[in-house]
Image (cartoon, helix red, strand yellow):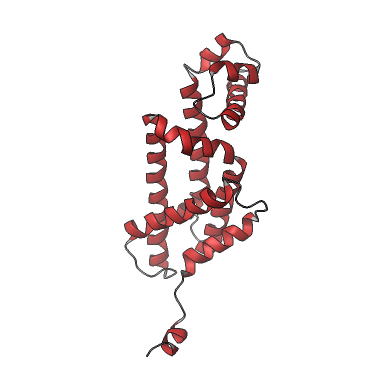
Length: 204
């Protein structure tokens, strides 16, 4: 077994244990038992369980961020399709990793400054993506001009609120990812503003 294979095996085992027992309750011994590796083998890759959890969450948050990158790099493609596809991919990642993400939010963020810094970096990167989307949409005429810094934060809250309330805690037993992404994309693209002809009929 190669070094990469062994490291992947340990991370996979740790992911399962953290999701099942939580961050604080998990021990290195638990990970060794789950991964079927010797203690010396574990320490060749990780100094402690904290680093294992950091690596797990770093890879997951990087994956979520990368799923949104086409919003910035997808030149020539309509924003509506890009937003839908990116949100759908992110929501799939939230569903596939719901238990470890709940552990991270409920225990990790408050327990370790490095884990909080990891989240802070992810938050800043995601806000940068949304700012770029808003600027691109305004430039192409798909969006009205807005305060991109302010609205990007609102988009980030919208982006996270749905998985936090409906996906990760299992609030919805049946989740149609494409439909969910479509609703969120429609909200971003169209907002809640009434059509001009409707507003005119509502004038006193």
